[in-house]
Amino acid sequence: MREKVPWGITCALRLDLLNMASQSELPGVVRSPLYRGRFAPSPTGPLHFGSLVAALASYLESRSHQGEWLLRVDDLDQTRCVPGMDKHIMDTLEAFGFQWDGAPAYQSRTTRDYQAALDTLIRQGHIYYCRCSRKQVAAAAVHVGDEGPVYPGTCRELGLSDGPGRAARIVADHDIITFEDGLFGHQSQNLAQDVGDFVVRRADGLFAYQLAVVVDDQRNAINHVVRGADLLSSTPRQIWLQRLLGYPRPRYLHIPLVYASDGKKTQQERRRTSGRQRQAGGIPAGRLAFSAAGHARFQGHVPLGILAMGPI
Image (cartoon, rainbow, N blue to C red; front, side, top):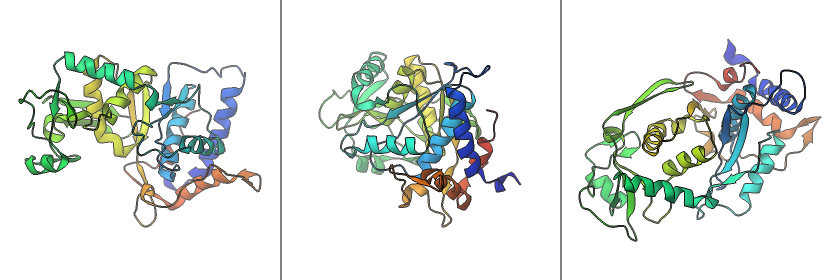
């Protein structure tokens, strides 16, 4: 069965081949700007194994299409960021053989773009201000949706002005948002029913992930998003924002999450990678970590090894 292929070794070899191909001047090897992918880690701690799998998937997808692969540091919430962790993450990626195109982008340096997008949504009449705490939302929610209590629109008709302690929410549409995921297939979600009016700027003044990632991908002309399946349910919200802001929709491919043999997600483990990988027996030690995937199982339909076997 294909699941038994030692895909850790396959991925390592393909990573080397793709890197060599991208640097070569061989006929037929042309870097195409038509495919632009990205990897966007948060500098809140060292990269865990699951993040490396997501990075590998997006990297292989990009390079197999002779496309560009960008690196973005999602450091918008500075209270959670660890000083120097961005460099640590880059060192780790380099130790594994990843090569990104251009200079890394930082969310913390582009807050004006998020404000401009929010101003557009305000002018369009899609935004209102909310004073509800999480506890109040949980108490008022009529039902629980995909990601917790669905906000019932308590403040939607109050006409509250902006101010300290007030979040900016966007009105969720009752239309069904649909898209085709590259791995999980047809997806649909009723935002109003499954999520409710969601926050685009938090009560503490920070811009929410859903708005920031949409603006980031538009600014960087990202047209292919490969990431973990834990963000699959976030995609309809991002598509809704893209629609309102007039942005083109990227293609999405969500990869199954990686679980250890005890059934826990690797994100919850202490199996962290190190940026100070060294060579062991002529093979980078960091690369050997990919073989650990043979001891992990995937949530979803297809092991990532199959994704790594597509055409170069």
